[in-house]
View 1 (cartoon, one colour):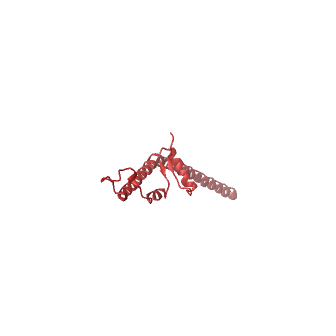
View 2 (cartoon, one colour):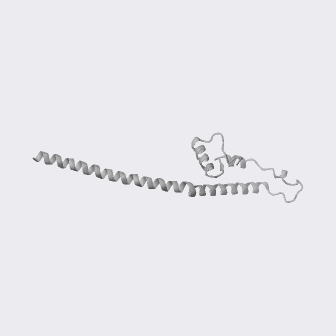
View 3 (cartoon, one colour):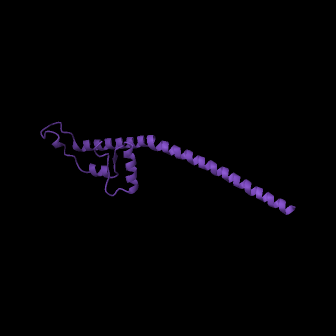
Length: 129
């Protein structure tokens, strides 16, 4: 598929760039932080889309706010879906791996204490003999 899947500002951090690539790879459209505000700060000239004498020319300010709200709503929904579909399962997998590592650590710690206790008992036995 041709076409842009996202837009970022020049000063985007490396971490944000990597995150954006990851999200786009998973099918999400990305609009960089600060870019929406930049676009929204420029008024939209809707007269190019309508007959200038038309009575039904929408209010540019309210339409721009509606567009901004819709874009923000869509962006939040994308982020929510991305979190639930991609990140949440990954987080759960990492938590499971962390629990396994913690269990192994506890097991090794217990074996270490048993080894130390055994060596102490051997030393006491040899000293009392």
